[in-house]
Image (cartoon, rainbow, N blue to C red; front, side):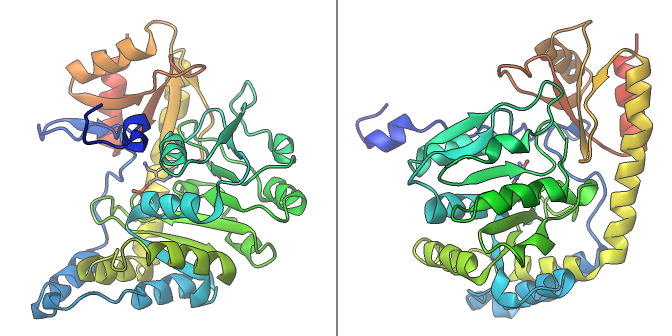
Length: 348
Ligand code: PMP
């Protein structure tokens, strides 16, 4: 604590992102990035946008990108919000909708929610996952000040069915229900169609994973016009120009090249389905995953020891020193060659 900080800054528990190593020969399986490059049309769009018009501010309404998103999801542009990565949108969500009563979150989930809760003075109430790490959605049918969880959940990778989400939305009519679909394209059903029926439901998406654009920082949210207008009010009280001209052009191009991304996503899913049984055959516990990572443990070493051992072999994975999951590793699905090297290193 320094004398220059206010008490809020002193009390914060900031999120710790995964390591971004300086060495280029590491196999990076620690931050759920896409191992494949973005669509060539994205790179072309950045080239075109990198011109003299950079002297002008970007469109504060992110129109071209929101149009591309609205067209892809068949929703109105007024139902789409774009932001500088989905983390930024999550921050606006906490500021705009939460704070009156405790917000329900799974006990094991994306740890950034806890950091945001501190920042925006929101109480969280942890709802335990089942012993097999699945979400017990019946436990979310109780009075609260909002609900947020990823589907598929992180870092477990398990997803829940749309009908289960619908039953929560039927109960929670007056509190905002946020479904963070960061990993949705890798195997879970999107809740976007439910947003038409439930004005309290908001889905959050990122271009960092499925669209291979973690370095661009683009995310978006889809929901009722009321919710989107709330997010705009907070955004415009904080930073009117969250997406730059290059990001707007590149992200719009990405949304329009669905054929390329379908191939990339299918390849990642195929690798995941190839690797999971090979791990199980070697005695690993592998939580069924509908995401671009596997959540795994093995009795031979503690979770932290596996992480150190892999780091020595220049393979980065994520370990969370937290109750219930300290023996687990979260391993991003890389290319087939990267995963074969991972298997080689961990094999007896
Ligand atoms: N939600 C979840 C569940 C995540 O794991 C991540 C990635 N750390 C994000 C949101 C944020 O993604 P980004 O800010 O890159 O869009």
